[in-house]
Image 1 (cartoon, rainbow, N blue to C red):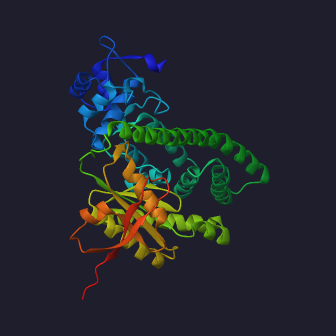
Image 2 (cartoon, helix red, strand yellow; image 1 turned 90 degrees about the vertical axis):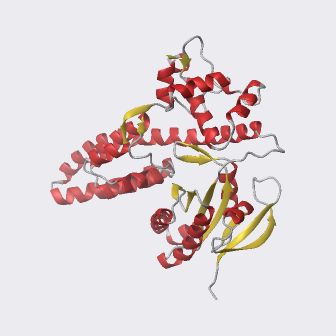
Image 3 (spheres, rainbow, N blue to C red; image 1 turned 120 degrees about the vertical axis):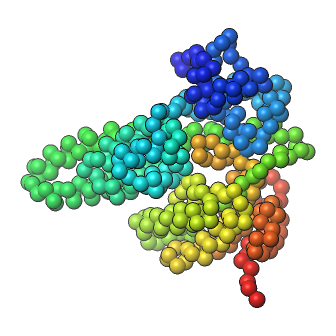
Length: 403
C-alpha cells in the first residue's frame, strides 16, 4: 500500500516539490521523521501541508512546538488529500501547445471546475496530466471545441447537471455532424452507439477526477482551519504579508433562473465569468475560481482589490447582468495548488453575503491597507456575520468624487 511505501529523501523532495535541503530542515525541526533512512508516501502530504502553512505566515518553529506538544499531530496526518499527489514531467503549457489551444482556454476550463490553472512551465500534477489526455481525446473527436467547453461548465455543477447538460451539448454536436454527413436513420443509430461507447467512459473519468479534487479541497480547508487554531496563541496574532480576497456575487440569481429558465441563467453566469476574468487581469489580481453565480479573486494589493470590486459592480448592469455585490477582506491566507484557504477567505465570503446589490463592503484591515489610494470608506458599523465569532466592523467602499 502507498501509505508504507519507502521513499528516499531525494524522492520525497521530488514528489513534494521542494529541495533536499528543505527536507533536511523539516527533519531537524521534527516536522517529519524518517524510519531509518526512509520516508513514507504520507510524508509527501505532510511536507506540502507544512509548506502551505508557512506560506500563510505560520512560523515553522512555532508549528514544530505545536507538533511536539500534540496540538498539531502532524505525524498522524494522512488522508487530508484522498490520495498521494504526484507530479508528471509535463507542463500545462506544453499540453496546450500540443492541442493547439490557448492558455486562456486552459484557465477557463480550470475556472469552470472552481480551480486555478497551474503555472504554464511548472510540472503538472499527474492526475491533471491524465485528465488533459482525456480532454485531448474528446477535443480531437467529433465534439467541437465550443461544446467541449460547455460540457466542462456543466460537469462541475453536479451529477444531475452532468447528465442533463452534457447530453444536451453532445446531442447538439452529434446532430450537427449527422446533418453534415447525411445518412439513413439506421446509420444514425449505429453512429450514436459508436459515439456513446466512445464518450461514456471519458465522461466518467472526468467526473471521477472532479470528485477527488472537490473532496481534497474541503478536507484541506478544514485541516488548515484546525491547524491555524492550534498554532495561534490567541493573544498573539501572526505577522505576515497578507492578501486581499474578494468575492463577487450576482443578486437575485436564483429568482432569475426560476423566472427566465436555466439556459438564460447559464448565459448570465458565463458573462459574469468573462467579466471577472478580464477585470482581475486589468487590476493585477487573479481569478481563483468561478462559483456559479459568483467568483473568488485574490490580490496582492488591497487598493487594487477595492478598485476591481467597484469596477465590477459598475460594469455589471452594462452587460445586462443582475446587480453585483462584493465582499473584500485582507490578511494572511494559505495557498495550496493554486487555491487559497483560511480565515481571511471565509471572512471575505461572509462579507459578500452581507452586502446589498451594488455594494462593495470591506473589513477594517482593507481600509488601513488601502489608505491614501483615492477610495472613500464609510462605516457600516459592527455587524454579525454568519459563521464568524463576534461582531465585525464593515465599511462601504466608494470612489472619490472629483470636486
